[in-house]
Amino acid sequence: MTKFHCVIATPTEQLYAGDVSYVGVPGADGDFGVMAGHAGSVSLLGAGALTIRTDDGAANEMHYIVSGGIAEVIGTTLRVLPRYAVLREKVDKADAAQQLEQLRGQFQEMTSEYRTNNPIQVRALEEKIAWFEKQSA
Image (tube, rainbow, N blue to C red; front, side):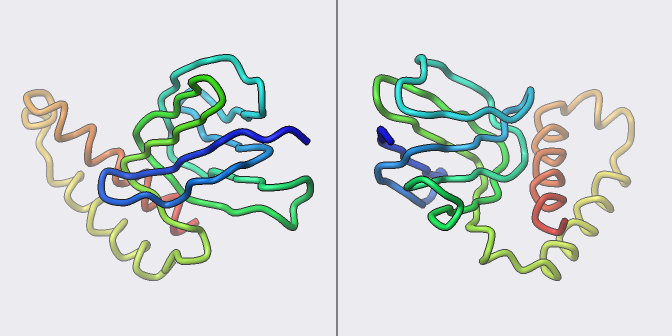
């Protein structure tokens, strides 16, 4: 199978760089797959599982939980630039559930006036809640 280059990097670290045969991406408007020869595109990321297949078959897969950011295909390279990302097997579900509970509490404490006057902060908190929901699932 033909391969293409894939890079996954958060604002603080590069998580992956290498040749792959397939990447399943959680888009903001639904999941989509990228294979060699994919048309150039830029898509918003949703919160969910990102699957990297380095060869044919599920035995050669890596799974990340990602949230926020963008995915772009330019030429023969896919760049996935999430705000948050973690390798699925490194997720601490108990910690994620605790973080989720705290964030939901913060969201509940926000007044409607605060939500109206601070849409960027509200959106950032909603994104973080979605991130921890995916980790604790």
